[in-house]
Length: 191
Length: 205
Image (tube, rainbow over all chains, first blue to last red; front, side, top):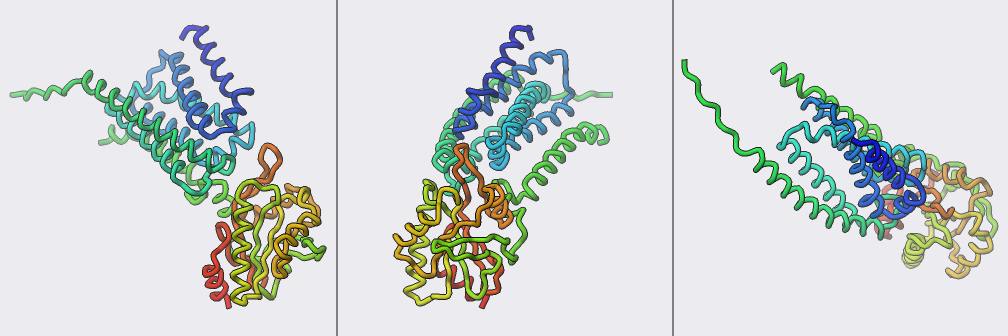
């Protein structure tokens, strides 16, 4: 990755993670879940281009996929989200983790092959949509730091975004499968 | 087989690590929300209520751990609340009417303010008068102490309460039942319905 591109990505991460944008993201659940979180993961994935020479073995890549998804999921736990809104230190930790998870995904996804990528995509869309469903239809406040109205709007927005993600995932999956092509059966060997 | 095991090991180890982190963080998958975490961290019921000195709207002094002899339903709120408090207080009003209609005079209802600085005693008295000065319902404020110390006592009871960025109390909607032996025996999400309350108090008699 060229130096100026790296600086642009780092600058964008700082812009999203620091005031005046960060308090805005923290104030609205939709902005937090649909704006800040995906942006930080995406920018982390862009940063992973900087580690071009670093090739992961499939087994280690799988471990990184699990850790990265786990890291993102951790900040989707309502209690974690509450703490991040409540404390600047934990908020900073959340930003850092999400960027690292983005780097992890950026490095590991290309190494796990098309079937692994499709499976990871299915998991991500399912995780995202089920969270959207819970937020949209729960009649109780789930996050103490956000109002019920905010929670339900965020859930609805996540469901719409989830539908979009599903479409994108289907298109990407079909492309990946077509590119890979059918497996040629091994020829029997005699004698 | 051995090579497959070796290949799968990092992924499985990562999965186990993530599982352990989530297990610990959510207290055994029981506390995903801040509310549930406070409840799960508090001592189980029945338990002795915390020592919390109170002054009611008429200037009477009480202590939460000394409420004995009758049932006491403890609720929380504050007068400027724009969240769930007005609804809870309306439900409490309705519950009080139903209790009195049934002649259930051995129930004491309490509304403890979460904003002792703002809800001065004269304001509590004014609100109490506005409700028709019900004799079995007290609106009380804790004896002056720091807000954080007060909130910590409530958290130890199992109630999530904190301040928002403007300094207003934010809280969950729990209410607590103290039995005639002076023990906290039950908590309810919101104000319990009459039948539920009567059933719960019949169990203990």
